[in-house]
Image 1 (cartoon, rainbow, N blue to C red):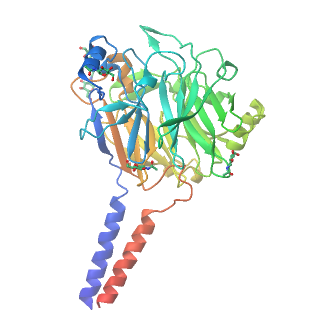
Image 2: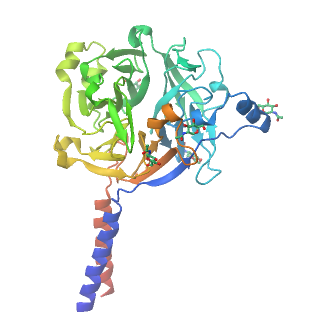
Image 3: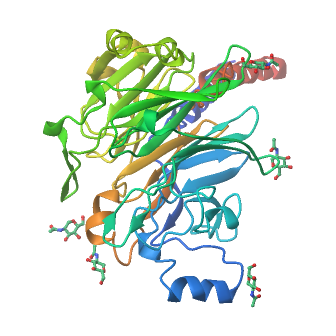
Length: 424
Ligand SMILES: *[C@@H]1O[C@H](CO)[C@@H](O)[C@H](O)[C@H]1NC(C)=O
Ligand SMILES: *[C@@H]1O[C@H](CO)[C@@H](O)[C@H](O)[C@H]1NC(C)=O
Ligand SMILES: *[C@@H]1O[C@H](CO)[C@@H](O)[C@H](O)[C@H]1NC(C)=O
Ligand SMILES: *[C@@H]1O[C@H](CO)[C@@H](O)[C@H](O)[C@H]1NC(C)=O
Ligand SMILES: *[C@@H]1O[C@H](CO)[C@@H](O)[C@H](O)[C@H]1NC(C)=O
């Protein structure tokens, strides 16, 4: 009997250790590249791109990431010359540094009229339909000086299952404005019948939050001082590199899994803000309605790029200085004690965007953006990384799929106990 008891206690301890170790905050490197390369259709084309500087490897920095049905999609925004393809998928032909393939096809990335993809920074995927909502901010560098592309900025909805275009919408200048603008990140919001209907988009240089309504096929925008950079937080230090980001406003954007609130933050700043979707969804809401609703949720303590909301009401945010992703159970309020390190690694340099898979892992891209513009990144070592870390959570878009490892744990412990009782 005593032996069985010892056995039982040991069994329970082992299972608990397994369950707890799943919460480990050391992320795994899924892919890493010093420079990325394409899966060129043939050698003639490859040489043409390399020799004529149409493809300049050091200028191709991965930024965005989203996953669908086992495929990893990345963006390579055209922030410098020689960046021909700004939306790609990962080809699984090399284990650790795979080739990339232009998505959805080669042709849509070719220079040409406004129907082509110009500069994709971000996308979001509706998990129920496999529709990817792609924002094209149409801003392509020309030589040393970047000038806005004459093409309107657009949203393209692409069906990943059938590989066909579903819809496209061009943003009018009455919404975008005539000054600087950069459509940076996107979340999608659902109607009561679970139809993806609205997109909320951060405009980092226009310092605006743009709303697109698929049903009305119309867009509108809100401005508020919370979207402006806080210049005293413009300077970010990672390791021994300090750079200034004082012109960068609203960038990180996240939608709560109950679809009630949009969270956002400027790059230059440490405050997290929240506004109700009921204000954003309503075309008639005014700047005053917005200002009356918006709330400061508290301090993130560090500057962020991408942020993402998990099913369990955790806000995951990149924290550049400490090379970490933090998990903040935002419903608990602003207390500093409620923020946990979800991922830390000393090879993390500039966390760009975040995504979830269907197995409880948070994925993210790091890309040395802090040295990309000044030194063109590192020589002789990896610059671009895709990481994942088990956080036992899911995307805000996976409504009602709340299975936790605690539940799994209790179930397995119960099963163990039962099997022991049976064996006695
Ligand atoms: C390379 O691919 C391009 C585009 O598919 C094609 O037009 C061309 O004929 C190919 N060249 C060779 C040598 O196969
Ligand atoms: C997911 O991918 C598999 C294998 O590539 C494919 O057979 C399946 O149809 C895809 N499912 C969806 C929903 O796209
Ligand atoms: C769901 O709502 C959308 C927009 O309100 C509407 O277009 C669509 O027909 C509805 N779908 C169903 C299945 O009711
Ligand atoms: C900065 O740090 C890197 C490694 O972390 C080191 O290789 C480099 O020499 C340092 N540069 C300076 C100026 O200290
Ligand atoms: C990498 O090499 C290039 C070209 O030689 C140089 O301009 C750049 O400063 C180097 N970057 C670093 C981080 O050493």
